[in-house]
Length: 405
Image (cartoon, rainbow, N blue to C red):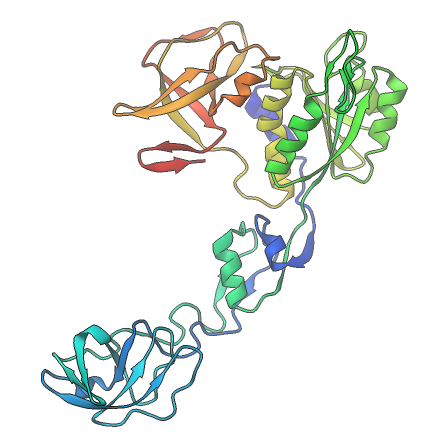
């Protein structure tokens, strides 16, 4: 069996970044930039005031000096005329600095009487003035291809006049569940059936990874039915199925994939939950066969499918943050496979601690609901109280005054 690291390397080596598309600016949020952004503007385009006050000539300012106020300029307006020797102009935050002025005196630092202001002391040149091009100059390469676009980058693009932007496509993911025992949403499970969980948890994980999931529904445990669904995913960038990848008589997914023309690259990874996982290529598109138990499906999606989706979307950081945490109770991982155990995290004066969410069975979905992270525990190991473990963060955790996501 491959290690998790070997399997992930084998998967990512066969994943290509998707092409790009032009989208409206807000639709680019959370997407990866596919072009360099070079500024065609200077920001700000002219010197402007950072305070409400008076635009003055710094050389005219000293204690006891009185200046004549010749007018006012507000944000969005242009000054009526230059400021000459012995003059001042009322100015508001963001307003253009009048020609001739080179500083701003805050309104609380003057006494205004009958159209004149008395100064309490001298003002340095450029005081409270934002210079032209302070933020961005024409020709600056402000964003590089590969940048993940957050709210800050969206704001900068808007400032530079980009109503549209070129970004990498979101991966389209076809999600297939298999099993005679599955009853889909909207139907009442029969006497020997269970609700279809995996379609919805895996689609949700795909959405969280920035992909566009589409359900292929539930296929019964028949080779022809599974193969038909696999062939029906031809418009997707990736296929992810769950169940039917082990060695039982009804584990038909791998055979269905090969009959549909897939080349399989790996099967079985030394981990728990998990182990039976298939990865291959079908028409140049990645295909995954995940285990059927809900926790196994979610954990293997997290460790293998999510990084693949992020790479397809052009992301640079493909894995979750990892941290060290001490065991708050003993954490046992019996057997010959590395454990990825669901833990709650909590911070105290001694640092970050972790405890199991409860029973770790691969069908106990509530263990994922309660989990802040996955503790990575070597085979045949019991981590004692206060022993250190590596933990993969699954959600935002406040630690040391910072949020780890």
